[in-house]
Image (cartoon, rainbow over all chains, first blue to last red; front, side, top):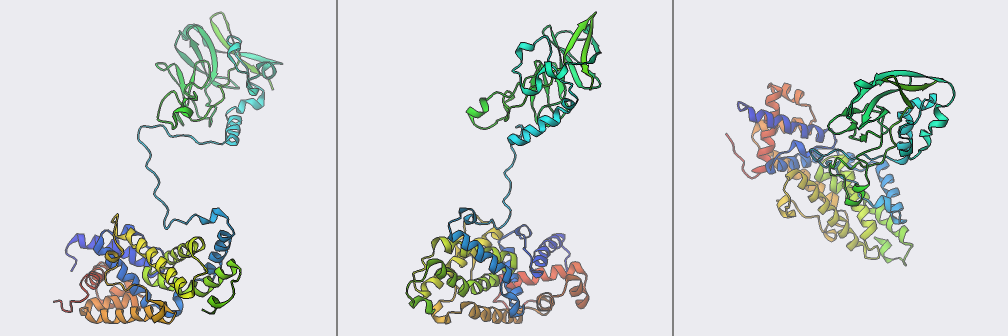
Length: 271
Length: 183
């Protein structure tokens, strides 16, 4: 018997159906592969019940009461309970390949993640670059005057010669991880912490952006979300367009910098 | 039954009367055909949730019972479609040899008991038609509720062979129930 290995695997698989059935659990249609086996499964179900003592096949009283409650609510017009429960968990829709995942985030989560991302905020270490201050839309956390005033010190982070136009140099101070970037002659310091969930941004010289490896946000060299246009709202659906991003994000933190004697300094406020 | 003759009681009270009178019967009817509690509960809930929306509670008792069992039968057919993996199968194809639910009038208002008795008789008839080792493996697994390991031990075969044997026994019983001889 069972010389054919295919017999073995079919018998093993079908036994999983039987085991579930005989333990009064929910069998999976996955263990039944064709119409013939479905006939076998149905016969087994019938056999299983017919060979049980009669008093066991009544409904669980708790189930009867629960269903009574659901029906009362439905009868009273509560629409929520009218949605029929699926027999089995529905298969999840396949994720399109090559498309950036859409990020769903509530306003509350967004706020929280912004605060996390700007952990340096707590130490009062934020500032705006003096070079391009007029570009800022002045979000509350980027009020350079308030945040970086008081005592502090300048930390040298790069030599200007090391940052030709279109390039960026990574730096670390007591307050920041970031990049010194040269945006066509404008030198700025940008935090390398994504304002979405706090992942570390990577500089892409060919794109002239800072790209987040977690959810694909892209920030331009002014620190603004570059793929965060509202276009996706109009076209409906985020279809992998690099210029679109499903949510808007605050701009990157921009610490105050100065250039002296070919040396770039970043301001660190003292707590 | 008597409720049908009463002067229009409050709709919700009437509905719960119907529920109380038939939930056990519908559950047993479904359970006897899907063979496991979780699925039987889901389908029973489907029947009565649909009844809340669609059942006309002013109909007479016989019509209400027919309606409930017809909806139950459809729910069972839909359930087995998932196992057949065919996009569209008529109820008659899904359930060849399956009796339609017992008409209420003839079953004396207790269709599930009559169908239970039929099922038991069918099982006995079925087992008698099978070759000895097939009948034996099904008796051990179903009637005595032994595990595969215990069944294999009783029959003096390996577990793998016990699984193959039960597979072949069910296959034979399900697909060619009328044939009584096999080498």
